Structures are given as C-alpha cells and as structure tokens.
Length: 469
Image (cartoon, rainbow, N blue to C red; front, side):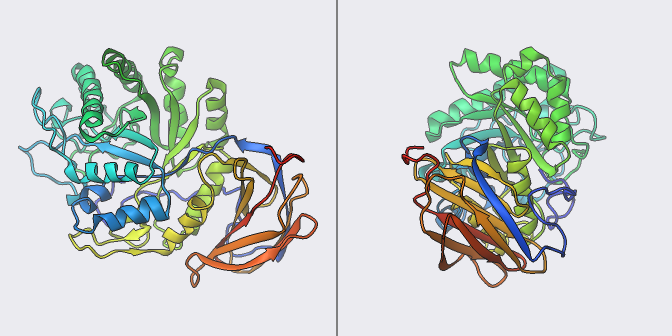
C-alpha cells in the first residue's frame, strides 16, 4: 500500500537494481540470440493477473459509467485476480486525515454493531469483476476497526513501529475478518478464495494521522492472527485459504514468514509478497519450495508512465522468483504515471487507457491462466507455453534507446507452426497488430524497436511429437 502525504505519489518505490530478464539503461546489443526451452518449466500452471480494488473501486464503483471501467480492467486486460479491501472505518471522534478515496468504510463501527450496507461501491466492482471472469478473490485488511487499535485510529500507531492492534482484540479482529467474508459471500454471492490478516504489516510508515489505513503488526502477532483466523474459519465451516505475509518487500516477507513456527506455516495456504523493493527473490522462492507453498506477487506499482519499469518487474518476478500470479496495485488512479486507466477520481466519469495499460495488455492478454512459464536464455524475453491450446507466447521488452534484433530458436519444440503473430506497444503503437513473421526451420528473427514491448504468438506448437502435451 502507499503511504505518502500526496495523492500524486501513492507508492514509495525503491527501483529494482537487478532485472535479470531485461536490459537496463540505454545501451543494448544490436543483435541477440534466444533459445526457448519448453523442458525448463519455471511455473507449471500460471494463476493469472490481478489488481487491488481499493481505492479506485471505492470511487469508480459509484460512477454512472462504472461498467466501462469494469470492461477495461476485466475484459480488455483480462485480469482474473482481485484483492478486496475489508475496511476498518475511522474513529468518528477524530479529524479524518485520510485522502477521500482512501476512506474505506468498515462493517463494525462499534463493538457488536454491524453495518452490512457499507462499502457499496467497492462491492459492486467486486461482483462485476467476478461476473466478467475473475476467478480468484482475496480479502485483505489494511487496519483493524479503529476501536481495536492502540492509537484509536486506523491510520497507525504513534511511531509507526509499534503494533497498533491491541492484544486483547486479536481474537475480535480475526472474528471481524471471518465474519465479513462470511456475510459478503452470502450477500453478494462472491466466493472468497483467500483471506489475509493485514497488508504490509511490518512497514514502519503506518503512523497516526497518515493519509490511508495502515497497521504495524509484527511477526509474532501475525502468527497469532493466522491461528485465530484458522480457528474462526473452522468454527464457521469455511474453507477459505489464509495468505501471509503480504509485506512491502521480498526480504520483509521472508523475515516475517521465517519467524513463524512450523505449526503456523502449516495453516498458511499461500505465500504472497509485494515487490516494491525486490531484494530476495531466490531466497523467498526457495523458502516457498521447501514449505510446498504457492508464491504470488500480490502487489506492485510504480510511477513510470511508459510501463517499461513495470515490464521489467513482471519479467524479473516471474523468472527469478517464479511467482505463480502477478497483481498490480490498482488499475485506475488520478495520476498518469501510476495508472493504467486514467481518471481524475473527482467524480468525473472521464477515463482513458494509458501507455502502461497497453504494456500490461501485452502480457495479460496473451499469457493466460493455466500457461506454463518456460525458460528462455535471453535477457529481453519472457516465454509461456499453453499446453491445451498448443501455443507459444514470447513477450520481449526493449527498454533501451537502440533497436535490437533477436533470433529466436524454437528447435527444442517437436513441432511449430509457420506463422508468428506480432503485436506491439510503443510510444506510437498502442497494442498494434503487425504483419506475421515467417518461421523457417523453427527459427525466426524479429526487430525490437527502442522502448517497446512486443508479443509473439506461435500457434500449432507442440512439445511432443504426437502433439499431446
């Protein structure tokens, strides 16, 4: 989650210094060779792409043309994962310092008092996302209700580093989360696959008087919440999985999870991290593998309007950490750099897809859930194979200032088609279809213009000679 005082900079981003799968900077080789290896499977079944619904759905869900936003996010981009924010609701006795869009209503404004009419806008967008094909739903909280906190505010503790959830309310908070998911399942007919206790729990910037909900919760309290949530899920006869730890960086996620006991980790269905600071991808991947847990990137965002920084992050997260899903912070924003769909979030129904929207589309439209992510030994390319559709997809990113020519070698496949379908996004080409390239001898050569993202799709491709992958 973002934390800064300005709506114009809703995320603190420490740019990744390592992007193994992409060139960084302005100097690129004029020619490169790439071998795509379907036998080097990085992710066996990719879960898909997603977005958090707060805070944009809290605003846009009340617009008269909200359907247009839903179509862009969940049909055009094909996002199939949504993160629903269970709001805490601010203390009515204190001045509300939060950004208007970040003032998320809670469902229990006072102990034992429940309001199931709350949060109508975000709930509408959640229902519509599911109707349009979203098949993975996570519920997460940024803060407990204000009356459970030490500071009396959902914005955080007084210093940002002390746990703001009072220990005596840990069970009540777990019950609040489970009760909310249970009631929204019945009321809105939405199945929640996962529930996570709190968002970015060990970050130090959730301070009293901040501009959004946030709550520091250290690893020990996180682990107790996992136990309590599991207890309430079982008591309610619910089978929702639990996600941990949703920290801001890979290192923080690793540190939190590593502090859990084995018994606590056994109650966690899915490990998830944010990658604003990508600083321990292999370490986190190995930890997830040892514990036999799926690993997701559940949040990332940046202010680069070109989308190329995001493209670098996607490739690194999917290849180095081998994330099984990738979720952007929010697709709608009032600023051009952060957003994929521009909207002023001031009540105006105006909207416009950004260049970043089309960069995301180059990935999310062509690499679909169920694909295998496979190896390619070239620093600009990400490869995915669809066994059911027998289709190979390669997304190539050239973020440099020189054009690059890449020769792709597909001889490791038993069979390939003869035509390579080409689609490109650049500063002058928003998702433009280009003429097919002919594949000869299972090799094709393509030119990647400077500062562009190009997707190549090769139909009728099979790993096995019989064509039954």
